[in-house]
Amino acid sequence: MAAAIALLAAGPSGLGGGPVAEAKEPARGKKAKSYECRVQSPQKFLKRRTFVQKGMLNPKKHAKAIRYLAEHYGHVETEETRRHNSESAYSQATTVQFMGLPISVHEKIAPALHCVEKRIRSTCTRKSRRYTPRAVGGFRTANSYRGAEISNHLFGIAIDIDPDRNPCCGCVDPWPTSPLCQEKKRSAYERTALSRCWIKAFERYGFDWLGHDDLEDTMHFEFLGNPDRFKKK
Image (cartoon, rainbow, N blue to C red; front, side, top):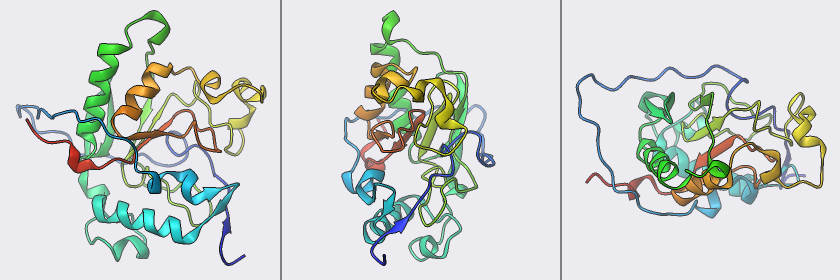
């Protein structure tokens, strides 16, 4: 079909499927910036399930999302994204701390990640809501999707948390073999070690959780809000 392109997810779009980008470290002695944490929702047209349904990519809707991402974050070494921005997304990478772990992300979403951590530390304190991450992955230099789809890890706006504990049940092997993916009647919330409190903290500040997607990629969050809404105090 000319209107759609069949896709397969090559694997979880974060840790363990390609090299992680090295990012510049913040300058020593430089005072950390403080941002106003404004609540916002992910923009619907950027959500994967808007342009990929039942494994089929809608090229027009996908192109609209990619154009927005390239214009706001930079190109990802493709001809299409270079047409919209001459500066690369990778050149704007920065290393920040998230829950005590270093992670490389686009500098524009660092404030959003800071707000998520602040929310987690203030609201996810009960035993049932707590979660201690062991590994996080952000910026990547290799695409983890087959076909025309582009992973948001290339833009530096996606984050993976503990793939061994939070599987991607709709990805290719070995991920679906996880015991957490075997009980098909269970919801994505029941297939992840992450607490709902953590998931809601991300969603509060513009991140979309791919546990809601057909992939059921429970490790994966991506910032789909407006990066300009986070202003310096």
